[in-house]
Image 1: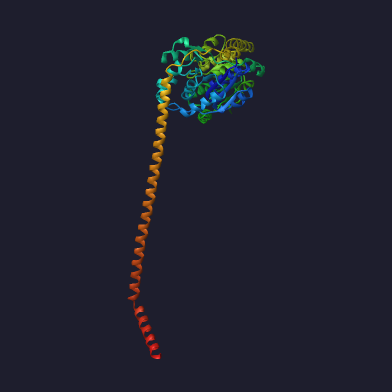
Image 2 (image 1 turned 180 degrees about the vertical axis):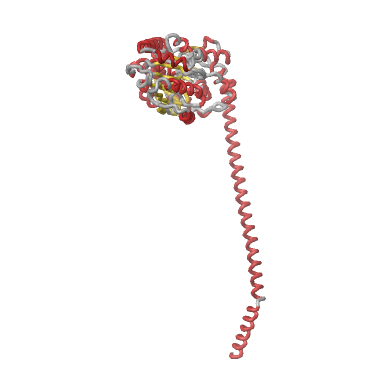
Length: 461
């Protein structure tokens, strides 16, 4: 039986979650399932639509309560497309996608893509609702997917979820696609590619990558670095490169086809998903780490690195000098051996067609939602509160309008008062001027002449 799957995430731009969804949707579609995706439009939207996905431009709001209006919208989407499974990939989606699933009596899969320490704490300290909704979210999921062992451990520790409820499904890649795209070239160890979101949270890793290249370029003068990605940290990074006089660095902006772009480079430096993609494209891959450099991926460390999704969180620190020495000393044959061994390992462990096949299975949903009546009650109370808040806003608007009208009337009265005072002042001035005229010698002389003229007229008459 085919599934109608609804996948929820924040946006369809470049990123680990987004590429996870891209590959997951590709596998589901290839098996004949219907895939509907709720997310802000992005670079992957057109690509997913070409594959057959239905992409709905949708904004998930992040606040301190359930989003009732968006919950109703998702319920309508579930009804319209006869959805029988909802995938909630990111935490901001919980506030509307989870209640919509529960109220529609449709099972949902709860994901944790979190690999950065402190993510849950940030949500709970910034938005109070997450202090109780996280555990509810995991407890009521008919399946929980963590992308690493670390992510699984956090769920168990923080929310007292039994480990048997959580399945680890690593980020995977469609090797059919990489095998078609890949162009074999000699690796000259000169063309570096850094792939990352250029944001504050990636600051340390970005500097690690740029500084590694800078040190390498001092030994290999004609080496160059391309940076693919964008974000609000771009200008700061550009200024740093200019100040440090680092040569041969080019910012390429965002890309809609990272895999094809990799064909033009020898060495890929980055984190997480892009390392997996680089290995699949048979490139020398260097994990730059969230805090410290972690080194070149080889058969000696690839298994350990893969456990934490190639983030490097569980790898030993390596200095840039160590990495550069290893890189320079590799012979052509050694490079060939490294990339081939890495490729074979990842293809065996991270083939999306195999790993994501779990999502195509029609598991019979038996689990009953816990405390569904409580959720209904919370939503009902919140709806009443939202109505009350709206009424208060309307009343406040009316009061503000009334105040404005009063001020306008007062201004009008003040204007009339000013006009009256001015009129009285002008009348007084006019009166004084007349008195001056009447009291002047010229007026008296003119009056005497007028009297004489009138007297003569009377005598003649």
